[in-house]
Image (tube, rainbow, N blue to C red; front, side, top):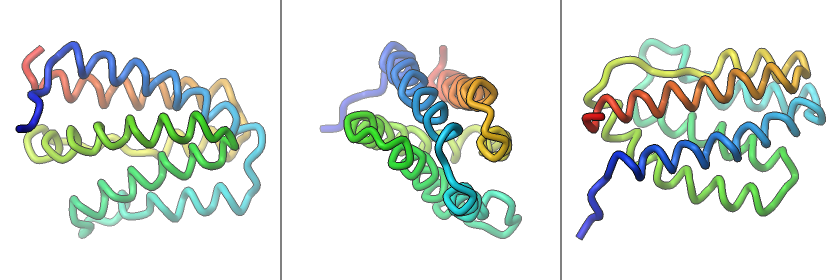
Length: 141
């Protein structure tokens, strides 16, 4: 039996995700090489392709966030974020089929490329908050 998704679960999940991913982009903004940043850009390139299929976009998003976690060089954070993203993938699959609009990663990449840690944290927080709000609209909050 699949556990039902509750509003409090969504809120808690996205609060935790926000903590983890803001930490991650802070680290990556300070330490990522040009090559690593280009790798991240390549991962999310399907978002810019008007012919991309939804499963490809979802896979790219997941790969982007997981690669960011790897680049933070903190194994515990990487492990926890991987777990959180397993839950998020389930929600994303449901949500993107029912609520229009994709929340891309362009602003996050721009802040990382500029090595602006504070800006990266702000845009990541906004990215996660927008994702959370989309989920809450879908599940009736």
